[in-house]
Amino acid sequence: MKHVIALDVGGTGMKAALVGAGGALLHQARRATGRERGPDAVVADILDFAADLRAHGIDHYGEPASAAGVAVPGIVDDTGGIAVFAANLGWRDVPLRALLAERLGGVPVALGHDVRAGGLAEGRVGAGQGADRYLFVPLGTGIAGAIGIDGRVEAGAHGFAGEIGHIVVRPGGVDCPCGQRGCLERYASASAVSEAWAAACGDPDADAADCAKAVESGDARALQVWQEAVDALADGLVTALTLLDPRTLIVGGGLAEAGETLFTPLREAVRQRVTFQKLPSLVPAALGDTAGCLGAGLLAWDLLASTDRS
Image (cartoon, rainbow, N blue to C red; front, side, top):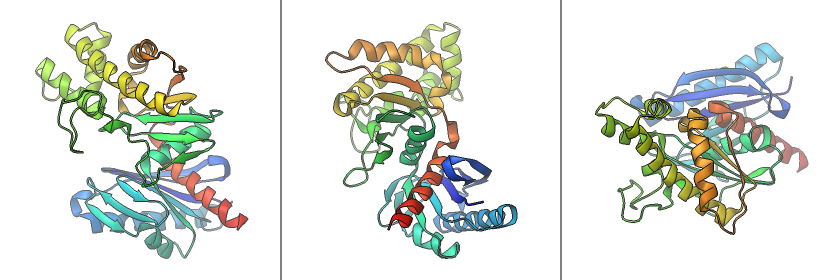
């Protein structure tokens, strides 16, 4: 059975799969990233993981993978196949595409950004199916975005398209590691909500999930923390939809696991802010934490299709 290898490399864990035509997940596996052992060890583990997946494909499907796709965080040169920089993995200018191609016997390899890969999957086989224009926004440790246009995801001229987390929503506000102040992710990411709720309730171990539960029980402190995050997120999303005019807004990541505790007030906050803009559908992501891995597989299939056409 023809298939491709897909790898989604995160700061703490790697998700992998063998992906069939149309995005069918034939086999899935996970391993720790092992970043505490340094960037060289992380790269070695990625190559070993890919090799093991190739062997699994031969054993179970009678042939090696036809291509591979890998999604990584940080700054990515998709065209050159270079993992340029990732602060949480400690690497710089890793020629990951070439290294994987060599380890996998010369098969074509696609390298992509983790959030854009997740956005690609959500657009084709997830919550964005049928939408010609969509914006995928995962709310996790930070906030990023993927701009979907007619079945592909826009990377921008320099690979920075979609960085909605660094839209300034509170001018002069909290310092952000990017060098600005008042960025969206400092107010509406899962980590920002966790930090605010821990301070409000006095429990340093409290997190965003705990805040959501407290909101559901009617805790006044939690309601205030939650509403401040929702308001900031709505401000950022309305800025984005003013610029991009998406048909669908897909919100995912850890904070979206709160379900309607998030989506009901968020839809209302966005509705209140739009004037001339067209209000898009605002929906939860459908693929959960498999989106990046599945997107890496779709990148690999796209690469095969382009190779066949040429």
